[in-house]
Amino acid sequence: MRPESVPLLVVALLLIAAQPGVETVTTVVGGSEDIETGADAVVVLDGTVTVESGTTVDSSLYVLGGTAHIDGTVDGRVVQLSGNLTAGADARVTGSVDVYGGTQAVASGASVPVSVVAEPLTQERSPAEAAGILLMQAVGLALVGGLVGRRYPDLLANVGHSMRHHPVVSGTVGVLATVTLLALFVFMAFTIVLIPVTVLGLVGGLVVFLYAYVCVGYLVGHRLQPDRPGLATAAGAVAFLVGSELLGYVPVVGGLVPLLVLLTAVGAAVVTYFGLRRFQPPRLGAVEDG
Image 1 (tube, rainbow, N blue to C red):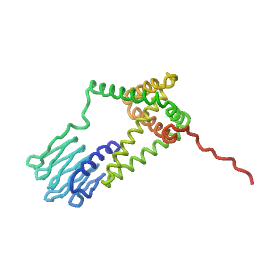
Image 2 (cartoon, rainbow, N blue to C red):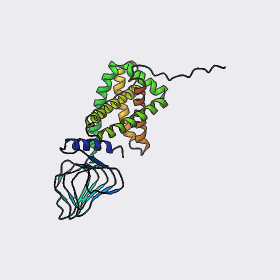
Image 3 (cartoon, rainbow, N blue to C red):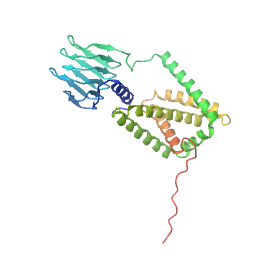
Image 4 (tube, rainbow, N blue to C red):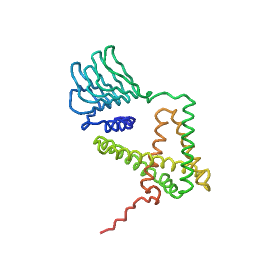
């Protein structure tokens, strides 16, 4: 599953949880599959699913990626967040067809009441819109970074110390913690009853990444203004944001470098208990002879 599919999956599972009567969910991650019957809801993450002509499926269909091809009847609703939705001339959907993104190809004669609820999520932004969003992000980071840097400089110093002196340990812990928790939240989301826990976990994860961003800002800004931690953290966070945006124009490496720095900051925050204590790696004692 692609990482960019995770937010869409969470949204889809929330929609499924809000739909009455849904008790079972089937997920299609790859390959090609014909849907006949079974689960109350089918989530298409990747691959191709087909409702054959002459068949009726008593399931709601959620398209997050890949292709959903309908030639028969879907006795339920269809929600498309991304991916491709195609419908043949004999296709019929008894419920609503809500489109939030992706592409659609509906043949003439099909009874598929497509309703575009929102513009595609991959809509291209104009340079002015991109600059405005970057400015708002910079202002927000400056405010948060300035406040945290001014009130808790010792915490940020401990996290920064771990990033500078123990980057391998911090980076490894950051990668493992992020991947493990992300996988755990996704698996919990499939149980439906634990979807609220998943949402809370993802919100907590965003807070941790914001804290990691502030820690990187402190590390960058402290070299310029060591006597004013609040101002230094705010300036450093903005500098890291702008630098990451500029690096984004460099293929592959441009996006990878800021991500690794942030994961290292996440790991440093974990091993220092969010800066409450300075990380000291364990030392092996000397082996006594005899």
